[in-house]
Length: 262
Image 1: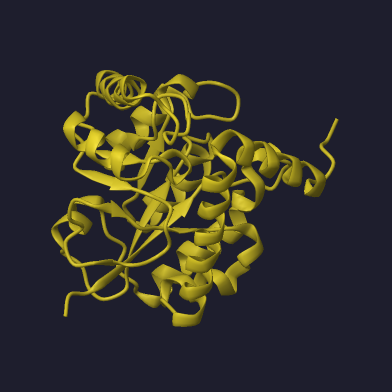
Image 2: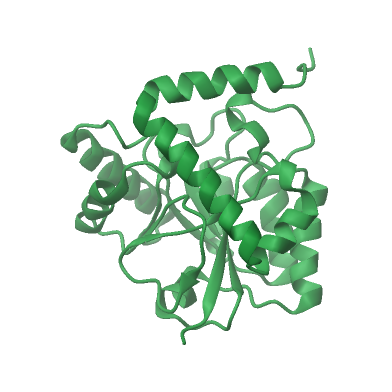
């Protein structure tokens, strides 16, 4: 039987208050460091996207991905991963590069030159579900072209914003030259990554360290819980529509967000 790999999805790493839209996807740097050092102490294999694509990994290997192009990719994640010798992939939105809270092109260039992968997360983080075909094609083609031009590196990996777009986005991405497409559905990758939408496990603040361990160990009940949560979320998005669901989610997060510093 082919080995299974766990693809982890991180976002911002910060102790401070964040945009409520980011919700509990924001992890503290200390928790992230605890994740990475546990992998190192356990001798868990951490693999590149190339190894994932080819199936060159052992059972319960881990691949690290980061969405949204946050500035903490360069200031927190990059230095720690480099010190541990761990590969990773950072997915960015070219239209948001250099804005407050996001990495700059110089920072992304340093990551790319340090042997990390920089891929596309769409042009401006628009969700793909409701986009017209021409706009979806533009999002995928222009984001890929700008990253390649700025970093002088080939871009062949895409992370779907919010896990949106489904099979239509995957087909359009393949036609645009992407070979790996990552979504948000929880689950392991088995054997060579193939041409489908690759599953990932989002790392959330509320899961704490035990949730991280349950994820990388692929504990069946935990995985089932994450998959059910994902299905409920997707059903809500389909029922309400992308815009209405996003507005409802933001209002809920606003009510639960801590007060911001002045």
